[in-house]
Image 1 (tube, rainbow, N blue to C red):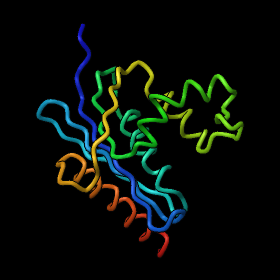
Image 2: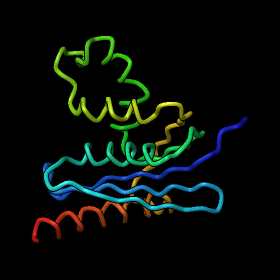
Image 3: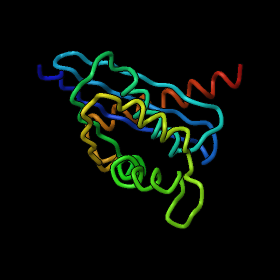
Image 4: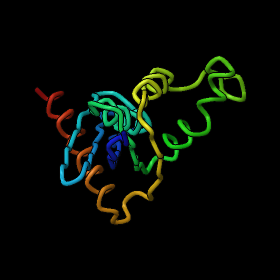
Length: 151
């Protein structure tokens, strides 16, 4: 049986780095669209980029062939190039320092699970519809986080 094919667009946003942040996800499955967003009061842009990918994959209810689009080379290169080396070195970088955001790298690896994920990088803020929508959702998550902090 061929797994369903899902297109996913992800983005993160941060006001200050660190500062309040948000993440956004647009999932496309056939004619169905689903939007997700959220945020954290004290975070970094890289963490929000990662959370977008994590939450997208965690939201899928069954294994799928996933085309995941991100404007973060940190996320794409981390999961496709650096992760196997980090694991071999006991979660250390080439210069023997602890890997930053290890909690999210491990969570992202777990979220991939049985999905067949193809990672794509797109240049951000260049009019790419899926990326622009994910960016708007990330900013929405950021603003909701700011509102929550204000009470």
